[in-house]
Length: 227
Image 1 (tube, rainbow, N blue to C red):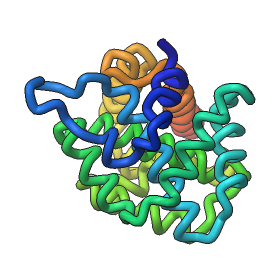
Image 2 (cartoon, helix red, strand yellow):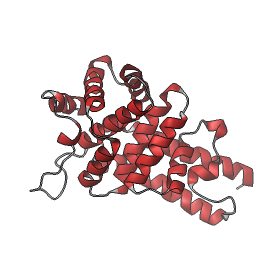
Image 3 (cartoon, rainbow, N blue to C red):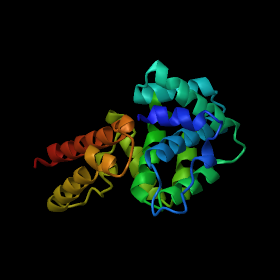
Image 4 (cartoon, rainbow, N blue to C red):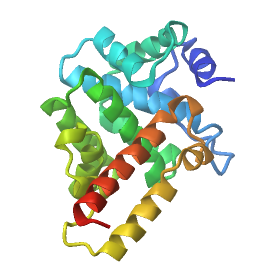
């Protein structure tokens, strides 16, 4: 069953948001990480739209552009956006429930933020209110300002990126440490690792674009250093 079929079933009875982001108390893990991931990402994007007064159809269009969703599938995403925007609970509730569902797994939580970044920048620019929303959500997830800045750097337009920021390194880093750090980042962010954590294959773009940004940053530094 695709993530869209799961989302359709979940929204059929208006159950969205915290009604989906829960843990089966009889299980040691979520029944399905893909659905909470999708609902959480859409819910946070809807809360972001709500805080900066962007209307739902524009945010849904951004979702479509970011992930190239078909028209047939978009009706399910649009319904989820609408339900999330109608929910009076703030982003904090959604964030806290994702922390519970994913048992504090920072990698999964980072993937959620990366997904919302993709939606926010779909119009070609990350607006200040969107950036502030994402920064506060990242803090709620337990990420430091420095860690958030590394995420943001990966979503900065190529010509404006600081390659060291993308890799999370200082310019003074030695060549050996640079190579080792780069190899570790690439290995940790491959698409098979994304899928192995139960993330939906429909959003593997999050992983592939992340690796592309890491490789581009390393190549820029390597070229500059002549290594």
